Length: 232
Ligand SMILES: NC(=O)c1ccc[n+]([C@@H]2O[C@H](COP(=O)([O-])OP(=O)(O)OC[C@H]3O[C@@H](n4cnc5c(N)ncnc54)[C@H](OP(=O)(O)O)[C@@H]3O)[C@@H](O)[C@H]2O)c1
Image 1 (cartoon, rainbow, N blue to C red):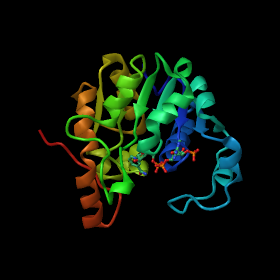
Image 2: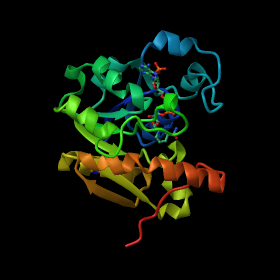
Image 3: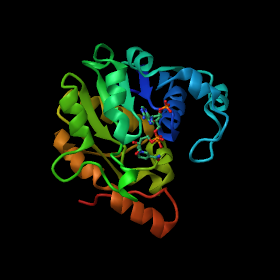
Image 4: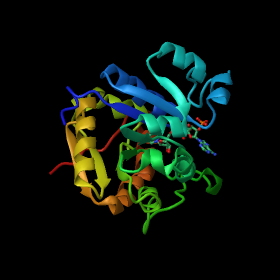
C-alpha cells in the first residue's frame, strides 16, 4: 500500500488533541475521516476550550468541515483503519461501545497511554508484565492492534520533520505483520523516516513505559516537542 496514492477511510475514536491533530493531517493527505465521541450532541454543545486551550469542539469542527463527527460506533463503522485516541483507562470500554461488528478484522492504531491520574502524577494502570495494547488485543482478538505514536506529543506525531529534520524514532508493536506494514506506510506518509518494529504486541509494554522518561525530558527542556533517536 502506498499511502501517498491510496485514499482511505479512517475512523478516529477520540475527540481530544490527538484525535483532532490526526484528523487534520489525514484530511490534508486526502483521506476521509470520521471522528467518534460518546455523544455527538454533548460534544457539540461544549463551549469551554479543550484541555490544552484549543477551541471547543464545535468551533474546531467548523474550521475543519471535511471531518465528520459520529458516535464511537459510527466512526468505527466508517473507518477502514481505526485509531484509538481515547483516555487510556477508557479505551477498552470505548472499543466495546464501538461494537465488535464495526471493529473486527480492521487495523487499530492504538495511541492511548494507560495513565491513571487517581494514583498520582504519571502512574500507569498497567506495566511490566502487561500493557494496554495487550489488553485491547486480548479483549478483541480479531482486531489487528498496532501500538504506535504513544511516545510522542500530538503535533510531533504528524510533523516529525519539525524536530531534528525528522531524524528521530517511532515504534510499532503488533502481532500482525500486514497491519504493522500498513501502519508503517501511514507513519511514513506523516514524515516518519525511522519506524522501528519492536515485535509482537507484548512489546507495547516497553513503548508505554517510555512515558516516564518522556515526561522528564519535557520538564528538562520545557517543551513537549522532544523525542528519542535510536542510534545503531
Ligand atoms: N496529548 C498528547 O499529546 C498525547 C501524546 C501521546 C499519547 N497520548 C494518548 O492519547 C490518548 C488521547 O489523548 P488526548 O489528550 O487527545 O485526549 P484525552 O483527553 O486523553 O481523551 C479524550 C477522549 O477520551 C474519551 N473519554 C474520556 N472519558 C471517557 C469515558 N469515561 N468513557 C468513554 N470515553 C471517554 C473522550 O470522549 P468524548 O469525546 O465523549 O468526550 C474523548 O474522546 C490518551 O490515551 C493519551 O494518553 C496523548
